[in-house]
Picture (cartoon, helix red, strand yellow):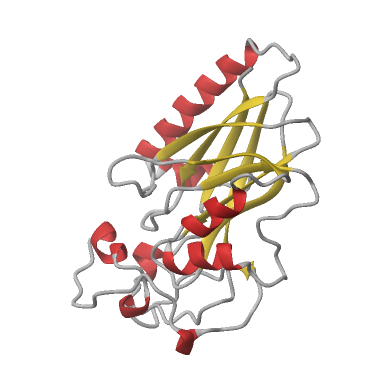
Length: 242
């Protein structure tokens, strides 16, 4: 998974959360009866120190479908999540879609963002063992960054996967609170007079493609020591539960 143990030791609450989730999953998996149904519980952990996520959207689908594709233009649905934290277009796309077996929005709590060190779960079903699972969630303190997993296989028992950070390539990375969704400063304890925005600004349109996100550089309001990350921004555990 490429997650350094030394990094986890510096965050004891996160290490405890990982240990508890892993223990539960292995216990559940040990009693799994592999029948005809294919139900899964998906756990997601935010590994960052100061980069909250929007509620992750998780979907099972056939191998001909991709929620996003590194090196290709982001869809409108991914753009709306990555720039504005707007889940509705993606939910509408996945609803009653013949290529999608199931989907879920994993809400962490009230308020719903998945905060650093927190764990969220979602139950989801797949129609066959050949289907795959994808996940998308906005990195709230970025212009158009998102956490994602693209078409990972579904396990017989338990599967661990790192969650990587991607740049949608749809908005210039100004790192200015005026161009970032309003919850960012409040969620991360930074004072600002900028109102922020939950709408795309055509003047900042980038016209790029989905790439691995290079992180936060501190060119404006974002603070690298707080909002940046190294390596995966999270990890996912998928356990078959039926």
